[in-house]
Length: 157
Image 1: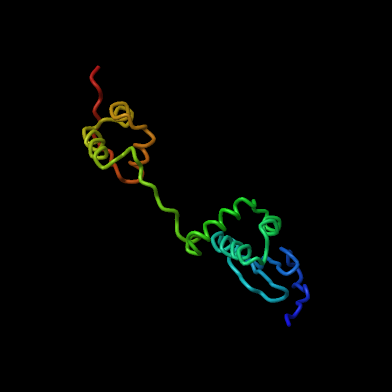
Image 2: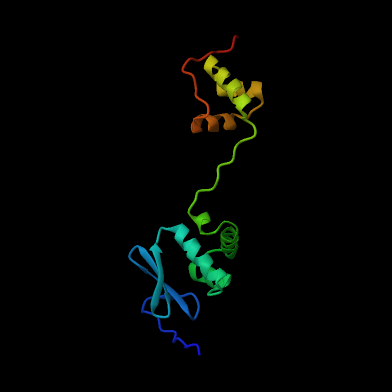
């Protein structure tokens, strides 16, 4: 026969639902089931918060609405987290998102643009000639895929 747990929480906790509460202790967030601490993480650790909140929802311990109300998080954000957890598991919260490869700067175009940069042409001139936006070229320069030559070539007047 299951035992009924009295909803007794340590003083200073904020309730998530009748069985769950949390409190901030210095730089830590501590979650309680009744009077027992069940999880803790640093207050600045967003990935751990998302993981634990998602697990509470998926396990049926708390609802989207209860978590959203207790922490002031949009329910839609919690639903996205739950979907990410179902697809990729717990590691999805701790691995950075995969970088996309651009489709404008293919390897051939990178070599062409780099040759123009080596000649000393400016980014706006290269953008005009190649049809690639200047912002795309600047992002490639900032990321190190392209390098700017020191010599400057001015167009003939």
